[in-house]
Structures are given as C-alpha cells and as structure tokens.
Length: 118
Image (cartoon, rainbow, N blue to C red; front, side, top):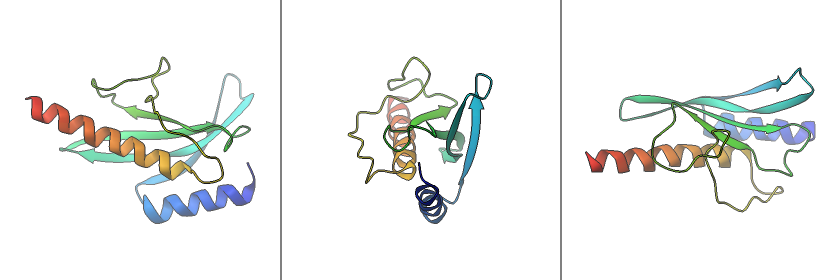
C-alpha cells in the first residue's frame, strides 16, 4: 500500500467516522505488519468495538477483515472470529471505511433482529 493511499483512507475515516482511528500492530513476533481502524459503535445502550484490519503488504488487493467485540450471537462468523462478509471487493474503489460501515450495519441489523424476538 502506498503512503498516499493510507493518507486518503485516514482522511475518509476521519471525515465520516469520527469515533474511529487508525492503528498499526504486528502478530507472531512482528514478522507481518497489520493496519486498520478501530472504534466504538453504540446500539441500544450497548457499546461494540469494531476493528477493521488488513495485512499492510496485501492491502488493498485483499479486503480487510471486520471483528466486533463483544460478538453478537446471531449471524455468521469466520473461524478466526471475523464477520463473514459476502461483498465483492474492488481494490481501486473500496476502502476501510466501506468495511467499517458494513460492521456497523451488521450490528444494527442483528440487534434489531434480537430486539424483535424478545
């Protein structure tokens, strides 16, 4: 990923998702660097942390993964805990902000379903 792409991604998130901020981390001894955004979304008085993360060396060719804590019982999660997202990823068009909005939508839709079933 280029520095210019990262700057633009940060600007998009800052302008449209003020509760989210960029981060960088590594796993497994620091061999691979991950980048992304995380922040809080509140629904029905409960706060959820959304992390949207991707390996720095493969983004934007591969879509970032979306993790929500605490997890919501309804819906489908991948083996690693990421929300299963069935969306065509177009690297020249799609952004971390798009995936963050999908995470927010997932919370909103699943909480509405839970609320209606009570």
